[in-house]
Image (cartoon, rainbow, N blue to C red; front, side, top):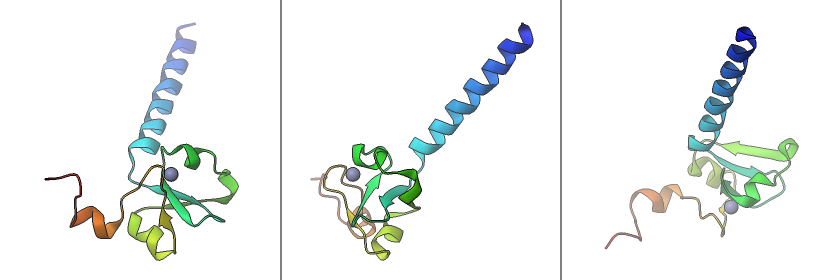
Length: 89
Ligand SMILES: [Zn+2]
């Protein structure tokens, strides 16, 4: 019985780690057939079929692949993300 509980604890811990890694990582996703890229937490990103999902490590990578930022989740673009910050001032 104790062994079983330990097993459950380890699985829970791994799942937590995994979900943390997925949502905290600075990655962006797109569908192979879409022109837009999304934050991983975007509603539309969650609907992308894993078989056609493309993952980018940075907005720049997505832009270079010809993708445009999604209008819904508004992922950053390398160009505006660093130099221009519209929310400030
Ligand atoms: Zn989106």
